Image (cartoon, rainbow, N blue to C red; front, side, top):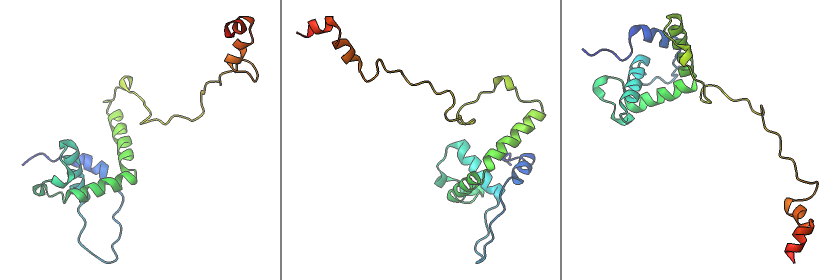
Length: 144
């Protein structure tokens, strides 16, 4: 049997972050389990396979079901919370080398309006550069 994509200890950390299933007042088909959906999501993202080609043999539901769950979890902030949990676990285990860390605008938002350069000063009040040049005797001589 193949090794599962989501080990039990990782699943325990992820399961606590997932939003509860919305109630279905009209009943309907049972929902795909969160663990099966996560397995399908990871398989597609890792393999690069199109969502609609997710193999039925994996028992992860349809690719569209997995894609919807990915979207819903993203909107619920699951991935950002999971990233934080995993960073904390790695740090506690001493497996992070913070000297190699890098920040960019994808992870840290830039503050607006900080460090804006001063506006360029005008050459002379109410005059443009060409008007200043035309007023010199040399410029008047060349214009003739």
